[in-house]
Length: 117
Image 1 (cartoon, rainbow, N blue to C red):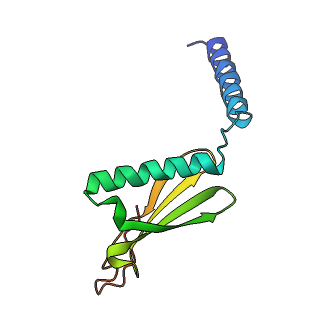
Image 2 (tube, one colour):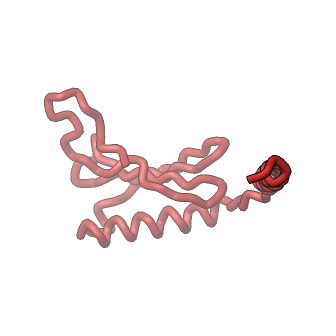
C-alpha cells in the first residue's frame, strides 16, 4: 500500500469509529414501567416452574424490591420458606434474568450461599 492509501484508510476508519461512538452515545434506551416488568417476571416464573416441573403453588408471597436501575421480584419457595426463594431481576431497559434460584439446602458445610444464576 502506498502512503496515501494508508492515510485514506486511517481517515475512513476514524470517521467510522466516531460515527459508531456517536450512534451508541445518543441511542435511545427503551424504558419499561413497573407493570411491564411484572409481566416479564411472571413469564420467567412460569417458564422456570414449567422447566423444573415445580407446581406454581410452590411460589408465593411475592415481594418487590425497587432499585434505581431495576426491579427485583422475589417469591418465597414454600417447600423451604425459611431459606428458599426465586428472585428475578428486570432492568428498566427490559432485560430480565434469574438472580437466585430455590435451594433448600443453601449451606452444605462449605460455607456457600444460595445458588446464584
